[in-house]
Amino acid sequence: MKIVLGTYEGNLISWESDYAVDPSGRSLRLVYAFHSHEGSVRALAYDHADGNLLVTGGADEHINIYDLKRHREVGTLIEHKDAVACARWFAGTHMISGGRDGLVCVWRSADWVCLDAIKAHK
Image 1 (cartoon, rainbow, N blue to C red):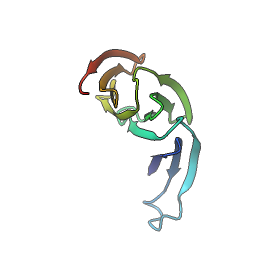
Image 2 (cartoon, helix red, strand yellow):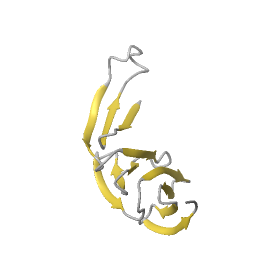
Image 3 (cartoon, rainbow, N blue to C red):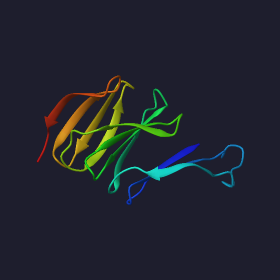
């Protein structure tokens, strides 16, 4: 089992556990921990179709993309003008983000192009 946590201080931390083997939870081990955003992490979205990508949205208006196999950041998306409040994967090929700026952005994950930025709310 993998656990990924974004913190108020802007850190991204991941642990792994062999809970099925050791239900006491004593097998918990740190996989990685690093500074992710200049401000709090507000959104996490794991690509369940591929299993290798994680995106985080932060109070710093950025969306960071992480390769979970290599445990490193592979890119940053900059479209929002305020904190990124949510991120969700769609069919493993697109990612949708929402921000406090009222924008809902649709991203194609093959090349990370913003296909549309819709002003959805105030």
